[in-house]
Length: 560
Image 1 (cartoon, rainbow, N blue to C red):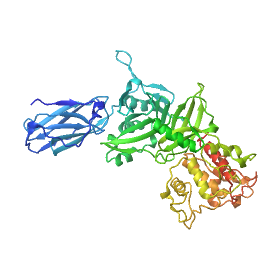
Image 2: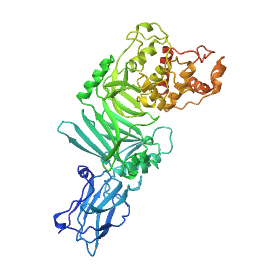
Image 3: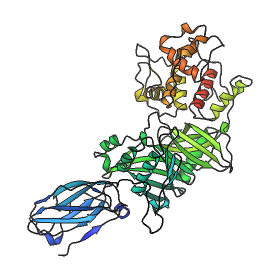
Image 4: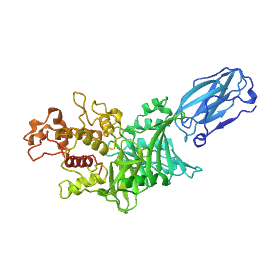
């Protein structure tokens, strides 16, 4: 029987589903003796040759090699001579680095062995030996753009008309980019690896596949590198430091060398756009359309996990809109497909010279994002000193009125209400289960927000285990929450005790609040009731809370 040898490219292999790692018997091998072993396999570099050898009492063995994504990479039936067999194949330079698994045997009786395929060492620069120019990345200060020849796309359109495009990057070019960043030396500016792919169609999805092994190796050269994916009207700026690759691999039951990261950009179709428009209308707002879902998944051996928690790092996405958008009347929003609701998400709007507007959306997680426009005001804020700030944050869905027409600017604000506003301002996810205070019930309207505030370390309770959600919040309590919110937003402000000396009543500020008050004062978020008094125990008003929220959002660069 002539051996069958087949090497599958990554693009073809990804389309082959494995039901199991067991090898089905072939008719020529009826009633085989179930004894086979595979010798240890030496690690290789992409472009190298893999040699597989072992023993068997049969005339042939069925050999299958499974790649890092869980797909069949190589298949053969080598002959056995004098009890031993050997086979070899090349892992091309365009294939994936990572852990490969060899399976040899018959039916349920198999032996397995793994081997590592490494990305080649990166050599930047150097002369050529003739034959014309060699493609290379484009290097500019603090930026390396991956050469277009290194980016391959495969588009598939399903029966529902929805297109899915898979993009792969040549490992060598991606590895080069990290070293090219390193060679530029340390800098205060962000160091970005730019990957430009084709535009994502409406109701379409593009997935960029990147082996974790290449990132791990690259981060040794440029540990602060960011990857920016450009896809027509969208871009995604991902700091690689937010990816805990070791824990991701652990959750997948493997090691980092066999994990593939999928960076996904999906443009919503008319069905979702209609729901977002309906949700916006309920808030008195209008959606501008072109809503985008940004997400990340990690995969190994046909198992996937979502990557959706970046801690205090607010990852930036950008959506480009036609026309000029006024920042005071617009904001990015998160759309929750489960509840059908929209909510504020930090957004800075930049008008370009060509008349388009960039919506730079920031959040410490992934979701579906859109941009809305609206204007809200209230009958009882005409002539009020905080009128413009109240209208600004109400139009951005951060604050709401006491009634449909009234804001009650001078009314006290409670501890639960202010915690809720901070959670909205930071676009945190509700979590009632984390609200472990003895006076916060799961059914209370503020339970989810208080829980999210606890999880983000914005609030703490009293010694008796209570939170006192309905008590008016004092100015010093508000300053403490604001300082913690700055930290949760990834901003560091050093407290300076001498800043409090300008207040004649600084001795009345509680010791537990002094550092936070000085931080909030230094950041320009909170000031005195007068030039010389702070009045720490005074109850804060709703208007004061709005002004401090606006200053917090601007200091964190979360709004214009």
